[in-house]
Amino acid sequence: MTQKNAFIYKNIILQGSFQTIGHVDEYFIQRTQHLIIIYSLPRMQNHTNDIYLYEKGKLQNIIHKPSSSHPLLYYLYWLLAYWYALITLCRKRDRWVVFAGHPIFFFFMFLQKMLRIVRFAYWVGDYFPGEDWKIRLYEKLKKHYHDAIPITYYLSDRINMRMNEGIIQKTFYRRTVAWGMRPSRVRKKDRQTHTLAFIGVMKPSQNIEAILEYLYKNPLWKVKLIGVCEADYYRRLRRIISRYSLEKRVWFPNKFVPENRLQQVLETCLIGLALYKSGKSQFTWYTDPGKIKTYLEFDLPVIMTDTSSIANDIIKFHCGEVVRDRPLDYYINKVAANYSYYQRGVSDMIRHYEYSKHYDDHFVALRRV
Figure 1 (spheres, rainbow, N blue to C red):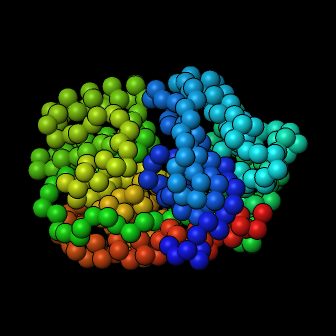
Figure 2: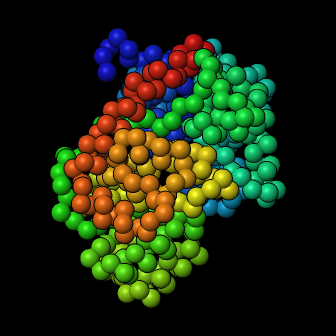
């Protein structure tokens, strides 16, 4: 980054993520004069809501606020942390952009505008199908704020179409912006290993059971399950591991692994797996799953089911395989036997989505607020 394009944003409050997904935090730290990032980890872990203050790319302070694993208290504490930042850390005379992907940041927009000079930008990162009343209420809440906020971005064209009633918006203020990527920090090599990787919050919809069944039938292979899951599902997976006698071949700490440790954990892995359940009834059909690009950044070709539109990129850049009408072992053997070919595809896709240029091109409206 040159000095010419440094700090092109002035004052931003950002909803942040401790995960590697998209490098949005990293991008705005490098580009923003005054930046407040509000972090909150998944509620199945004990943690605090953390507020990070940056001035021209340098961390000035970290403020810890309470959180809870209780569903209602979790979001209440999240809301309180945001209002603390807005009222306490933002001066009345300054103009701020609140850039978030959850509607809780937009509650009481009229009151927020009375108290501070704020504008809002909404990055819609998901769509949840289904008829459950809580899901429908959440989607109506998202649509309400989407229609009320002029600067809106979408993580995929499929979300773009859902929010705009079948028409893909591509204007100065409304457009699709997928996750950006950072060049791989892993030295290219033909890994001599038989270890698979899974990253993310583990849910029944992600076919972890199919991975364990594959290990049972293929005793040369191991897997690292990197992430957390609910207690009941954790016990269910542990029973399967015990039934298949896989204790020595499955690494499953059920903990969030921070970015600074992720490279060490993944360096012995060969392939990243994303075996989502497919179809329009699954929320992954609509979004840009972060784990796919995380695998690629750590130089791992991907094997994924044909669910998100990113599957088209996997095919286009030949950086992995998309599971369709063949068993899992066919795709694992294919990638392992042609590893350098897929690694070249990994490099090509990373260059295409390089995050600093990618976001510079798409977030222009945030610089005009």
